[in-house]
Length: 386
Ligand SMILES: [Zn+2]
Image (cartoon, rainbow, N blue to C red; front, top):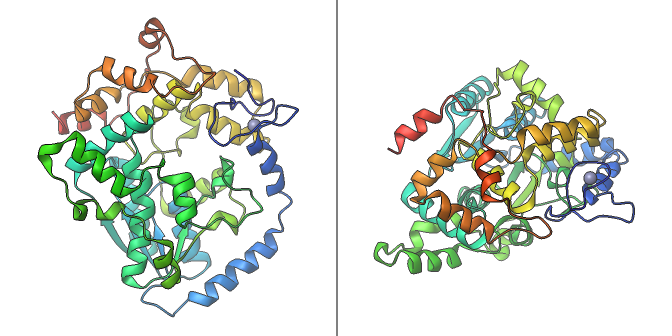
């Protein structure tokens, strides 16, 4: 397999393209991040805010998981820009205890209104199976929910401005840093919904589970509004990281100091990255599947960001990837329990989605490579579903 000569991402990464020197497109576009006139972008942000402030029930909606990026976005927009946001959460059903405590602290310290929407878990479970079988990715419900639910709320509540946090140019090449990325139908279809819209999902579920008769109204939180409705309601969903230079490490320091935000242990991630993807109990399983399909995991993603910011050597990154990526996570037991699958079925499904030239590991390798990181809340989750 070919690897980027600068970072540690291989050619199987979605959207990464390699140039003649074998440098990946994300490494190349990050160079442009430093050439952007951030003063100008900051002015653009102030102009945007001026257009919407004090004109609606809330100045904006901030879609919020309680993770590092959305927490920073709420802090920044409230403290630095004096906005009065409605903070909205699409709760994917796997929010961990520490993130719930962090969220409580954040919303009370910042004094904001907060809505948590948790969709029906029996449907979520079925969606997880369906999207794993179809796409080798069980997170369709989450990708789609965190995009569709806030957009629908913006239309219903007539709050047209939405702020997401991290721009996707930080880690993928759907958009370049020079672009101002917005969430709209084009982006949703290109980068979010895995090529499955909610109506398709409904049909697939009713085929797989004919007795359950899932209705269109059951999947409404997952229906992304039409571009016509987005335009008609003048909805503008932007990424804060297009207006201020996104620096995760700096931002984590700020939310830890200002809001008492705390990191957590996540399977497949070195402890020094305790801020990454702490929201979801299923993160270890998600990253494990990615490794089986594409031959790299979350540690490769994180260390590559550090290499691009000149904070880590490539050698050290390779070492960390070897230690942490691709180990069978302890939460796999929980995943199999919820989806009612056995290990063999799980591996067979994932093997169908391997991205060439990556090769699916042998049975011995699968059994040999187990994670020895145990998240302290795992037993709570396993008991919950026993
Ligand atoms: Zn690279």
